[in-house]
Length: 523
Image 1: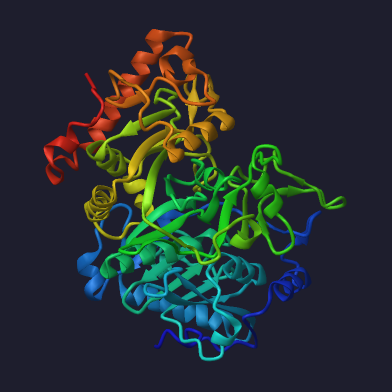
Image 2: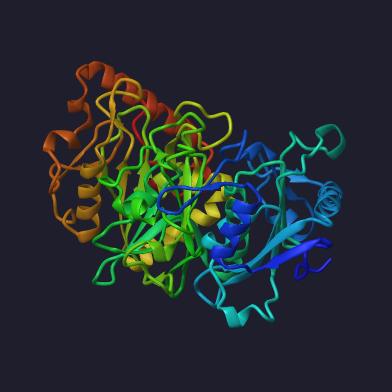
C-alpha cells in the first residue's frame, strides 16, 4: 500500500488541508471543544492525558529490524498485528468525516520528510497543522507524502484479540513509513511518533536528531536546551532577548541547527503572564489548549487547576512567538544546556562541563518525570533518560552520543548542566528553583559571562560550579548551603551519586575511560 494515499481509507466526507479557521469551526460544530477567552480552542483528551509508552510498538521487519535497539523501550510487534489493526482502522474510518493535513518534518530542505496526517478529529488536525511544518499552498496540489500518520482515537484495540497491552495502540512502521494511533485522544502521540521516526531516519543522512529547544542571539550565537518534558526547554528557550528557532525537536547537520517542527507544544500548568509572557500571549485564536479547566460560562481558563492533569498543554505555531526564526534554521551550537529537574534537590543549579563531562551527562540524561507527563506518573520520579530522550531513540544511544561529541569538539561548543528542579531539600520539603534565577544563569551561560568565572569542584558530583553568576545570590550556587540539615544533604547527594554510578554501568565499556571518570563519587 503506497504511503501517498489515505492509507486505504474510503471516507464519507474528507477535508483536505483546511485553514485554521475552518478547523476551529469544524471542532466547535462537532462538539470537540469550546473557545476560551482570547479565542483558543479548549479540548479534553479523556482518561489518557499523557503519552502511553507501554502501548507504543515498532513493526519488526526489514532493515529497521536489524537497526533498532530492542528492549524495554523499543518493543517489537509483528507486521500482521499492525496490519490487522490498520484494517480495523480503515473499516472504522470508512464512510466517516475525516480531516487530512499535509506537512513535513525538518526546516532544512535537504533533509525534510513529507508527511500526511489523517485524523478522525478536527482538533487533532488543527494540532497537526500548528505543530508540523507547513508547505506553501501552491505545493499542496501535487504533494506526495513520504510518511503517513493515521489517528483514530475512537477505535479501541482489544488486547485479547489484537495482541496489544491495552485499548490504546501506537504502532510505527519504519519500512512502510506509517504510523497508526488508536484508543487515545492525547495529541502528543502524533508529534512524538514522528519525532521517534525522525530519530531513525536522520542519522542515515548524517544528521544528529535532538530532543532539545534552540534559540539564537542577535549576534547569531545558537543555544540548545536538552531536557525531558517539564524541565524547562520551552520556557527557557522562549527568551524575549533571543530569537526562537524551536522548542522541542531539532537536527544538527553539517550546515548547522534546524527545527523539525513548525510549532510549539508547551506545558501550561500554573502558567502566568508575569513568568512566561511569550507562552501566555501565544494562547489565542488558532492555539489548541488541552485538559485545562475552563469556566463554561465565562470561558476563563484556570491554569492553576490540575484536577484533570498536571500535564496541561497548549499547541501553537512558531509565528505566535515574537522574534521567531521563520526559516527555522541557525548556525552551529555555541552553547549547550542540559536541563535536569532534580527531585532530590542536591544538584548545583548550574555547572560547567568539559567535553568528557558533557558526554557523561548526555548519556546519563538525569532528570525527573514530572506528574502527569506520562500515564500513571502522579508524583515526580527520579529517572535517567539516555540523551535526554530515551523514549524516542530507536537506535543505540552511543550512536547519538558519538555524533554529539564529535560536534562539540568540532565547533567548540560550551556545555552546562542546569538544575531546574528543587533546592533546599527534596520534592515535598524544598522548593522549586526560582525561574528568574534560572533565567539569569542561562543568560550568563549563553552570553559567555561564565567563560572565565572561577569555579569550585563539587566533592560528590565532580562538577565545576561557578562561585558567582550575574543576577544570582552566591549562596544559591552552593546547593548544600540551601539545606538546613547539612548532613541530610550529604546523605541524599551520595544516594543520587550511587544512582548515577549504577545507571552508567551499562556504558562503561562503550566510552573512553576519561568519560566514565567524570561521574559522581558514590563512596
